Image (cartoon, rainbow, N blue to C red; front, side, top):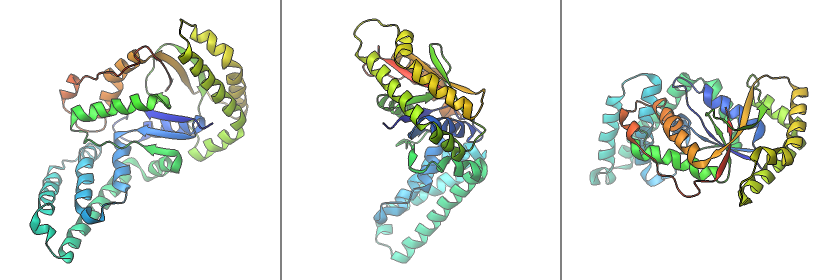
Length: 315
């Protein structure tokens, strides 16, 4: 049984340390990881090869325009001239005259745009550290970076898209959130001083115990969901999960002693999304780009299942 995590954390606005921390935690407990990160979205988008060979210029311009607010914030540089140039190029490449121009002329523009795309990637490598970038993407196919359709400065749409992603993914994955609330069920050890490769070695050493824990946790969550009457969640957890939890933690502690922990928590869906709306999502946007105070006015309307219990891991 594959275990899937979705990470939504608050970036620190300077580097990728918070993202890397969350990914190290997830690498131990999950088989597949989705991460909602404005910065990693941009880095991933810029590194994705263009698919539209007939209109490659428009595709690259779109990527560069999308990346500008986050590149500007990360580099602490004013990039308004670059934006103006890109908008002029976008207008030109959409014109009938450009479409009827020679292949040589179009190739010149394509090469300029490709160099600009390459330069943006190199700049982000320097800002965030190539070692951190390599460590993050060493997860390979186990990592999915959620891509946003909207530009982060389109505050209303980006804000709703962020929360929509969390809501949809919460239905089929475990959430790892940068939120500390009450109602902790248990604490689990983590190994932040290790590389992701070393964490995989630890994971392999406890694979059977981890599998049993995840099976018990899945059984517990289904029991909570099926219950039609008021139940004692803590007691039910002890009954279904606690023995497998203790076996897993004991083996992890025998392999490597650590004082750092994450928590497994439960909360009503409505209360969780109020907390996400008030803090995590808005802070995540503000710590990724220069966002105006308009974000404070944004509101999110929850979908159904407001009384549903959400189980999440908290950093």
